[in-house]
Structure formats: structure tokens, C-alpha cells
Image (cartoon, rainbow, N blue to C red; front, side, top):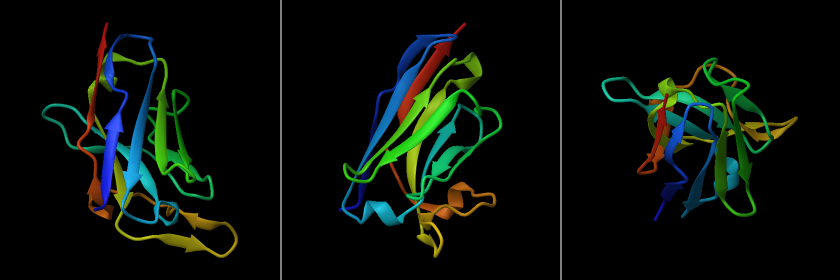
Length: 134
């Protein structure tokens, strides 16, 4: 069945780093836009970063320069390198698959350039917790 499984979360001090991973299975991974979302207690789920197979990546302003999203289509893996962590980065982190694929004739499978919300993604992992202490 279609499945996403995250790993790599943990507890770190402010300024620390983690590498989150997401293993995908049960579908043609390469044709879908993949994203990382996060949700802190009492807050809405927010888009952190997304990436298409053409390498195009979009980041939330709050994580630009600190987080790097990547994907390995040969291994069906999605990763998020999170550096210079801050207490406000504390949240459950989820990987997600877009509900449709997006194809551009000049670059291949990609993510749309405009805003995307959780409603644009239909497959979710169980989440991995990141806790940053000051």
C-alpha cells in the first residue's frame, strides 16, 4: 500500500542540527511533488519545504538558509537537513505526497510554483518529533 515513514527526529539544543528522512513505498515516487510540513501544539500544520524531481525547491521564509530539502528517486527517499535549530522549530514534522503530479515539458516532474497547503497533499507519514531547547 502507499506509505510514507519518517525518521530522524529528536531532542537537540538551540543551534543544533538533525537530518529527517522519509521512506516512500507503494507508488511511483518520482512523479510526485514531495513536501515536509510541521505542526506545533495548538497551531495549524504549516508547509516547511517542497521539492520536485526536477530539483526545484521552495522553502518557507522561516526556514530559508537553515533547512535543505532533497530527494533520492532511486531510493524513494525524501530528506530534510535542519540546521541552526531554534526553539520555535519545535514541532511534529510530517512528509507528504502531492495529490496530483505536475509536469513541465522543459524540466519534467515538478512542484507548482504558487502556494500549496495541506489540502494539496493526500498521503502523509506518521510524523517525527523535533524538540529544540534553549
